[in-house]
Length: 274
Image (cartoon, rainbow, N blue to C red):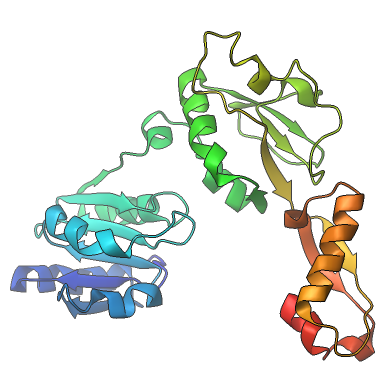
């Protein structure tokens, strides 16, 4: 038995329905639906994972208008009606489609089809590793280049200001200047100098797999103490917090929790900000 984030299983034919019923033994919380492309959007946001038992072309054309962001898109796995192949189609890492495809393939004695580069090269996925360790990616636009650099080199140099266990392929370094990844709550690390990896890009034959600026992972280790007048809006509180963090050169993404005096527990603006 596995947990598939309340998956929706969609089928077209009777054979597809029979396979959907078999999958209920693996995912007891799954719900099976007769596939109707014009109604999929109505419950797209209600399930964290979708298992389609049909041709992948049908699935691609149907979900294309619904796809928004790799951080929020659900996992999508496609199966043939015989259960021979479980294809991880969307959100392989953060959404868990790779994991689901492997679970289904194991259950049906089929084959999981995984195309994410890190998995095919037996390397940890940066975004998934960050999620598992409660680290927040500061700039998602830098992830593709950092991941490409990782695939090409097989290693990444990591500077961390928190105690954390690193995969074997992540090499811990003592100086931020030489790091590919910086794990810190500092908005911009003060010790960064012109010798940093990303600033050597032009020297290294204009390689496009090295990000133009640091790739930060933010540990959630800041506790913000807040006092406010009654009726203070969430916007005012947020502005004040951001100003205070900017003065200390700390990242807003590293906020772990908010603390205040007990009589402010029901303050509307404060709760909206939290």
